[in-house]
Length: 97
Figure 1 (cartoon, rainbow, N blue to C red):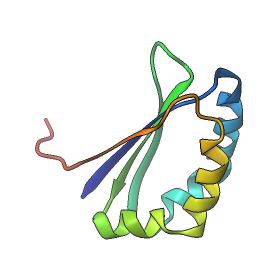
Figure 2: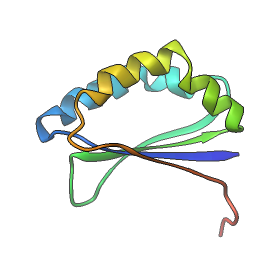
Figure 3: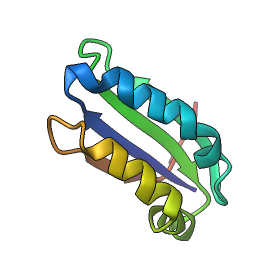
Figure 4: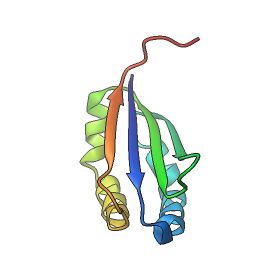
């Protein structure tokens, strides 16, 4: 399993626009082959910083999504609202307590 975290800093006035876009597409993203979990999180102190937290069956599943028309469409509509570069992390789970 691959855990993917993408932290995005938005222009404050664009947060609601992004939330609408996410809500329009979240079911399609979650239903994409290989995606087994999807969350949207918001920074506790800075509401214009959001992060997606997703689980993918493997690297190939994530790469298939990243090359899909769905991703390209959503990402094109998302990145225009950034106030800083996004930061992406890929992790694997070592322990759950």
